[in-house]
Length: 106
Image (tube, rainbow, N blue to C red; front, side, top):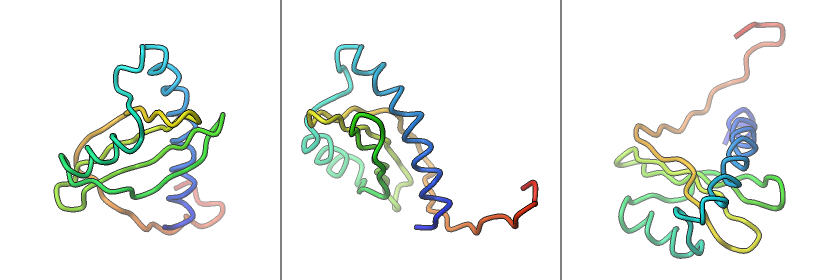
């Protein structure tokens, strides 16, 4: 995993943790114990964990994806072990981009 990819993942985790609080406030409709969520993502979508990061309040953000189908899911697991689905979609690609040169506006 490149440093840029890792930093982008952590940035996304911070943004998503705010969304996780909203999900928690909605009576945990898209939440379940972590092992159940991971098992369902693997069985139904063929997704495995691709990256992870630690956010506020010891919440863990994880990206699950299937290289075969391109489906992806972002989850946040709270300290109590409950995992919430935050986002999902298609066309997942693993990238290994180099950092732009310093002073470059790219």
